[in-house]
Image 1 (cartoon, rainbow, N blue to C red):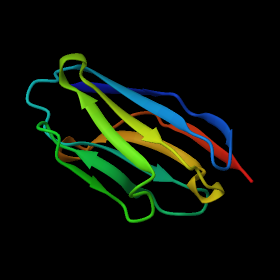
Image 2: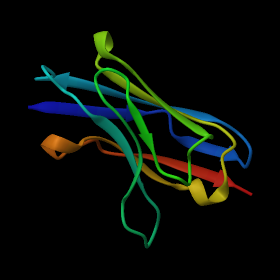
Image 3: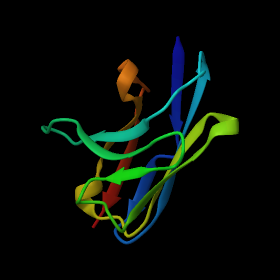
Image 4: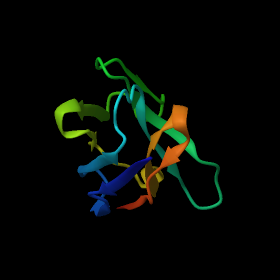
Length: 113
């Protein structure tokens, strides 16, 4: 089994930046796609960005150009660099291996106006 542990959330003012990290441990052999999702209060969980093992990325329209997903395969870690943050980015952010339905515990990101 694989465990995912997120870190890096916090409180930031609008326009600021945060960097989230997600470390995978356990049976990490042949993990392909990893991703970040988020869930705001009263809303469904939504895709933020994904990245595959060779670096192909995909972004939600709402974050494209502001967020950047990256990955260090040697460290089994995926990152989410979030710039130009907006209050509507406030949510719990989850790291995931979608194909295995594995999720981290989530990290809170709060953007104040």
